[in-house]
Image (cartoon, rainbow, N blue to C red):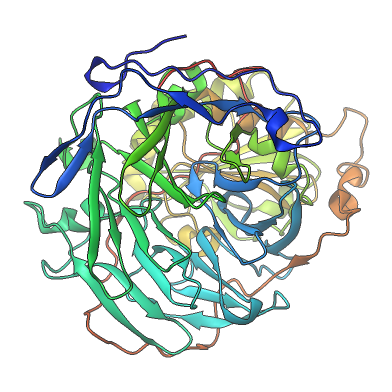
Length: 582
């Protein structure tokens, strides 16, 4: 199947039948020449490639799968690896980091909630630390880097030079960091702030690299200069602007190596606001979502094609991503392919063959996360009556946090009402909790919906109990009062299907007593050799005192523009072959 590439130059990406044999040559070619490729253009040292010189073949991962694969992207994020090839994969949905081997099986788990409420919150990035340890950037831990030692035990926290970073570790132990594209914050950033940082978290020293590209409104500077980062084996760092069509390479001494771009089929723009008050909206046009180094020594990028895939586009089959492969020495675009938006997890073999993977195939090899108890806070109705979560034990619970100013909540609440009408209220209960500061605003908002389930107003202090960042925020709770799943956001069929599936697996059968309900979840199926290691929910001590060097820290974090986490997707929808074109 052919699709027009930007500029009208067609590139075909066709998955060929795959046979796993005794040697890698049996797996088929990596790519094919692209006769439609045309020379790049150079303007102000920025080289733009209208089309790749080769067409990349992207295959579905076969069964059985090869045992020499390197995970490069997981759920749309780049992956860092240690010298042995183990990949460290942030899993924010389950508050943990997965350690994935060459057979794409989970070999270890770092973090995860515990009965004591410990563990990670929302890991954004993870990378190896010296001596076999691990650094984790977690959005719920004061914007610091958590440090786990070689035994997987939490050992303290470092304060990075930029809050909530995307980062990777160089072979010499230095950490390269950028502003994360996975947690967008609108905040004041000095016009002379560095674009990137290279530092040693254990020693507390480092330097700033280059300067940000300022935009018209200072509050937009962080978002406009956010982007993914990857580090090559020689210590060169590669950075891509999340919202600009540009990739850069920097040496460890800060020298710029190259600047490259690719032709895209849409116009990029800076973040834009419209409306005001409760109707305030903002829009961004992402370009590059993730970067990763492949086992073949090339740079891989996961980018937009016609537009960056949104959850709604993924669920409806619209939208496309691109996998692009770059020469790390020159910045030349070598190969590219366009894949369906639902494709967000990829692995590469030593020869550069790319495989699309259903991420659930990896997830199923990990132990289910331990279930943390639901904080038993008092719930206050709009009439002033008080109840507690414990009063609802024996039923599966859906706990939904909302606010009158939350636009997605306005779409989600009617859907919850319709869904609740299809369930047995003797076995399942919905609890809707307003976090509005203004009680009357919450009441005026919710009354017209005439919800058939309890509605409460607990105010914004609930954030300190449940650590959510964006709204709506939904908890699925089992019959014993333990949190099964945290679901952030609303707006796609994928999200909704995942929510309902998780809830319905927890609803007890009609004949179950409260003691019997949920009995099948005792131990939560953890018959596995994989270890689960947890650290404290909030770091209590500082392992490292970070000293200022040639930079000034970013301003205090502002409000979160968007931090909702999409749940794991459904199985890969494209069947045996990927037939989209680049």
